[in-house]
Amino acid sequence: MIKDKDIARDYLHKNLEMIDLINQNLAGIQDKVAPEEFNQCRKAVGYIMYEAFSRVVEEIVREHPDLSPPGFVMPNNLTKTE
Image 1 (cartoon, rainbow, N blue to C red):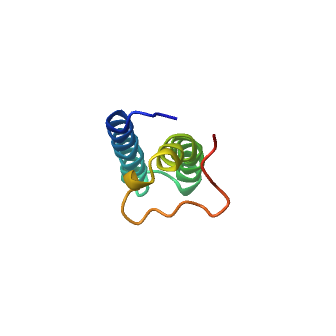
Image 2 (image 1 turned 120 degrees about the horizontal axis):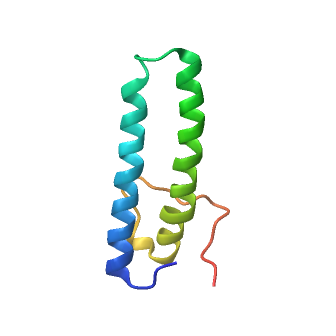
């Protein structure tokens, strides 16, 4: 995805921060809205987080395994594509 390791590292960190912020925002409304509303928001946010994670984080880690976030495990069926 991104060959330059420094750029990849920065882009990876920014995406992980974005995912964390989205998750925090979702958690912040859980007790403030009806369960049905929260579930709708959670589903919509889930799509965003999945896309950011699978299309950015996994792709960068595939290219630069040493940039893998702590505790991150690459799914077994994913390998680096040429």
